[in-house]
Length: 276
Image (cartoon, rainbow, N blue to C red; front, side):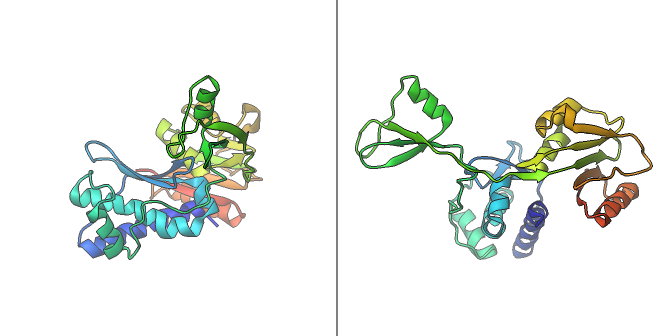
């Protein structure tokens, strides 16, 4: 199941649904899949309101696709709709709640109930006399250096219990091909590629010969060692042995669209990323 493609489609469906309900058009700058930790989704608006995007936790999306698509994405798009209707300071107030109930037919819940154990960044357990607390590595290190934290209920100083070992599933891209229509990747596109790859481990990266842009930054962003990256020298053929491909081009680029079609016919999972 291509959860990223489903998430993009759900964002557009929510925008269209809001457009029908309110009789006007709503827009979004981009959707990113770069959230980490226990936050499932987030709406971000620039100060001048010219850039509005939705951020999604790729780990939680892959692990909880149905709830992310059915509730989390509408929740975040509702923030976008509220911003464009009423301004950026609506939060979870009555106007946002009305969008959730009247437009999307969903309960206006502020928090989700997803299992975040696979994405949690708080594996250090501390105890007091009445409860157990999950603390981050930063907070744990601060306490180990001498700072103290107390329970607001029993007032007892928190004491370290143990560190939990979280078994995270390893999702792999055995051979990923990344290509751009002009053979150039900008820093912003590299950041977007990182979101698309998400928590997948890239075993081998294939790039067209002569690709310009910060190649070293791309390898670092995708956590791929230089020894696992190879160039495909021929421009008249596509590389073989691929499992995944990300192609960046304009909507009307016939050459890249043919390449995507050929790769899909070979069983490669292809993401065609439209450039603005």
